Image (cartoon, rainbow, N blue to C red; front, side):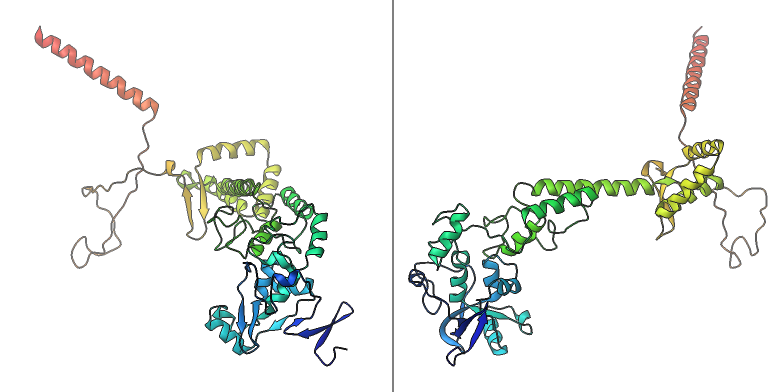
Length: 402
């Protein structure tokens, strides 16, 4: 069928494989833009890097399949070959991978992985202007007549720039809008897709060194496809980021309020028992449900008593890792001091040993005393006493003068 040459049947038609590519129909105008070895003519440049492989052909130009895919608008080579059956996939041999690593065309981490190649000429014949830097429709395409018919349907004209390429396998705009609406209805914007923030990516999506909103350079199709799947573009990315930030902030505030519950502390065991049950109940939804059931079963008097008790109990957050209740700073002591007191005349009973010397057990009594701030009544009484003392002093001075 192939006249003794290797061939393959693609979509029911026989294609001969020659020069590491399928032999497809040539075009006279297209041949003025690229030569038989894949070198571009007329000052044109590929987006992807090209190279030759001396063990295959000393002058024929090749490119990595992943680069050909991304520069043509595909997110990876798998979809590229699946959607372009006339792209002949070549597998790089270990020696070819070593050679590409040596000349800086391939990362050393790919030494033990599968690497696929494609000829530069076949990539250009398939996608023309899409594969070029600053490519223009028809002017930079191999099959001008075919591309002219395609772009006319889309309202484009010959010479228009290709611009950014959308992944043909990405969801449609309608599908993206429906997904975004579904996420909004579920209240899951903050925990939904992660394309807007990615580890190691830019903190500002649409601001860079002047390349493009979706790009770290010429190979920009993957970045754009990832953001498109999140429904992001130049007009709505800031709104989306603000909405997700607000949703996350509201959720964290809700969790903090739920964790802040009354604890007994120095106010007595009864208050501690009541508030402790509430605190541990709030840690789990099941506990919260049990608390609501308890409250519904309690009488009105019991609920009022509990409410009065909780008004007197400071609110804190139980930290289970250290077993401590954390309170607000405005409920914490502002000063602390140690005061050594003289020995009391009353003899205190000790467990044993002596008060000093080698037989001392190093026992001490430590009393913790909290001094609360003076109330308004205390301040008023102090002012009254000061006024009375001043009046008495004035009377005494008047008596001495008389």
